[in-house]
Image (cartoon, rainbow, N blue to C red; front, side, top):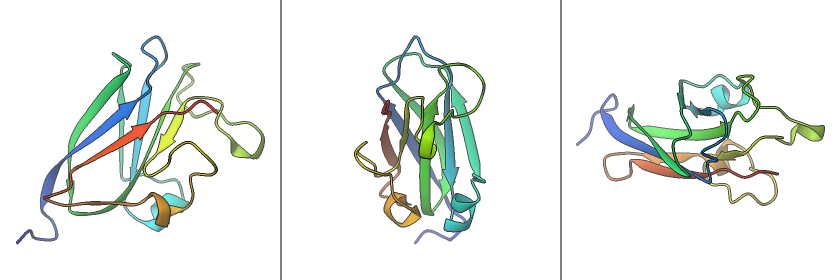
Length: 125
């Protein structure tokens, strides 16, 4: 049995990365409140070395939402247009790029000893 504070390996695989684009930023939210307040518990950034990149870490067993964007203009923030629609490639857990990404309840994923990865596709809207 895994204790509540157990750390498990976790891989975030990011697809549709533009190797000639800017840094890829990853935010991991641990609950609905942090998600609503846009206060991620974990953040990562990585170079766009290929069209598919991976971020390896360890997380406590629990529920998470993961959001990713590629900073094409290198200003260290996700630029948005009207209605908050991203102007840069972006993706979130459990989103196929169609319609709105939904809320925490749609985006959350379970991380445990038997499920330790998520694939995020970046979409240019």
